[in-house]
Length: 196
Ligand code: AMP
Image 1 (cartoon, helix red, strand yellow):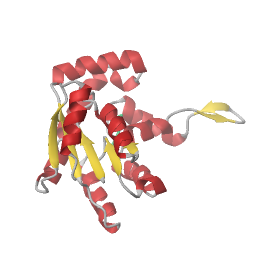
Image 2 (tube, rainbow, N blue to C red):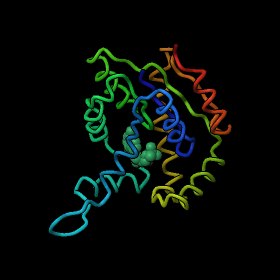
Image 3 (cartoon, rainbow, N blue to C red):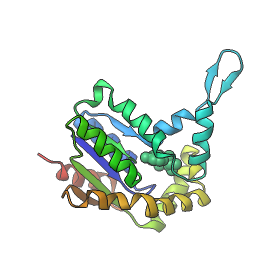
Image 4 (cartoon, rainbow, N blue to C red):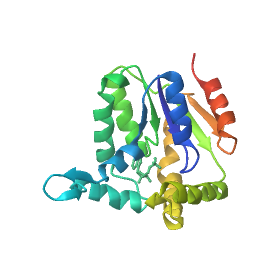
């Protein structure tokens, strides 16, 4: 089973994906986490800790609240989907984030005779999201959770990611979940959406 989580930053995609991944015993694929991984310093024997050239490029996008380029995200995703643990299915957290990524995902999946089975659309009140994200900034020390970057990320969500829902609209696989409910209630509603 392949499930996509779509929702604005702070809607709880990561939390729900982690839980559902455990429940279904399939991997949780977060492009945000994969991209953040590229910008973490790695120990270098000669020059000490260093961030790769790719990591520095990625940091420019993430820290500015902009989307990383589609080709780069697709490279990470296709590599990950080739891993043995992804053959029975996976959860996509924060991917696809553009219509172009959705089209490229369709191509990739259809070549393997796979498909997207469910799109979970987490719907949230924007004011409440901003409060949640500012709180997360203090707890997790995420550079992209500053007030300015949050505003940029919400704009990007509306202009570039919300249209991804239109891409899947005629397949009858989108289920909307109220992200203002408690994590427990959200999870129960997500379980009720799963195809049998
Ligand atoms: P997330 O952890 O999903 O909130 O993602 C954090 C940041 O990573 C986003 O604000 C983007 O800069 C970048 N990112 C994550 N997923 C994607 C994607 N599918 N396409 C482009 N950029 C992404």
